[in-house]
Amino acid sequence: MQEKIQRGSFCVHELPDQRKNKPHQLPIYATSSFEFESIDQGIDIFTGKESGHLYSRYGNPTIEVVAEKIARLEGFGMDINPKAYLCSSGMSAISTLVMGVLSKGDKILSQGNLYGGTTELFVKILQRFGVDLVLTNLNDLAGVEAAIKADPAIKMIYMETPANPSLACVDLEAIATLAKQYNIYSAVDNTFCTPYLQQPFKYGFDFIVHSTTKYLNGHGNSIAGAIVGRDAELMHSKVWTALKLLGTNCNPWDAWLTNNGIKTLELRMDRHCANALAIAEFLEAHPKVIKVNYPGLESHPDHAIAKKQMKAFGGMLSFEVEGGVEAGKAFMNKIELCVLAPTLGDVDTLILHPASMSHLNIPREIRLKNGITDGLIRVSIGIENVEDLIADIGQAL
Image (cartoon, rainbow, N blue to C red; front, side, top):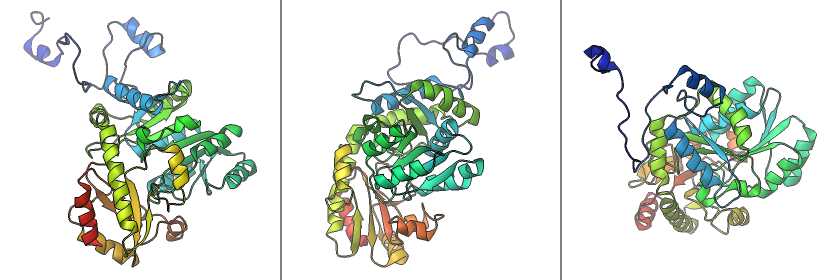
């Protein structure tokens, strides 16, 4: 080709791929589109007659490998073949799922102690497009069933367990059973646990969402989300269609960073869990702490539920200090080793004040009703030496 064209044209065009054997690490396919060998191949790929890639908003080899890994992790040890898609964030995963499988006039049944951003998404955005939110106590199974019976517009139960930031737990098996009985979708945010600690598909759930930004990545250097579905055909026909048309797809770089993080998931989660339990026990015995929310403590009201469905109790906890907002702010300003940051799941310990940060836009009466008090502190326990963490939290208290 070089002999037939001028230098400027030669500079513009790609040379043939030089790869001779398999790379040890997943390559980053930083390309917006893919070439066809002929117009016939292009037509066959567009029509689905031949598998292939078209455009990275529709699918990209780097992204697909990481999505497949997350899907297999959620189905690990089970005789199922779930399908996953990566999105640009955890919030885009939730919105894409809902817009993919629900329609105007449908309703979502959920809990009042969801992550504040999720509640805002449902109330401020999705309700404008005709998908309404109904809140109830998901551990009151009779109440859940009564709500479903009373309103045939309810088409999905959406939940978190443990919830953010109250760490309340919901019985996965009981909710999935009710959803199946009334032929409605069941979806759960599994970000706090990851598939290493909890696998909702074991209990019959239809969909799982993740903010992979958190524990799956674990290093605070990417933002992405995942939707995992038990029914691969439903995922392709509805969820993928919504993803490609809404443009909520992940990008190859963030997918690649997520893949790197997953390599150490088991090691990190074991340390997160061990550290969190030790710190929860320390806080529970501290005279300036009113309450500790950690499902690994026997004092936690949902300890039995967590023990039934979680391998260990995770790296997240929250606790309430005496003195409300001012006491919470004073504690956070005295922290030295831990980091004040509005995220979670990183290798370092991160502290947040929900009333003034993550749940700032949630009405106070709703916060208080769901245990998100003015003095509540949320802590994402890292993998540092636990003695150093206890010393830092102790001096701040």
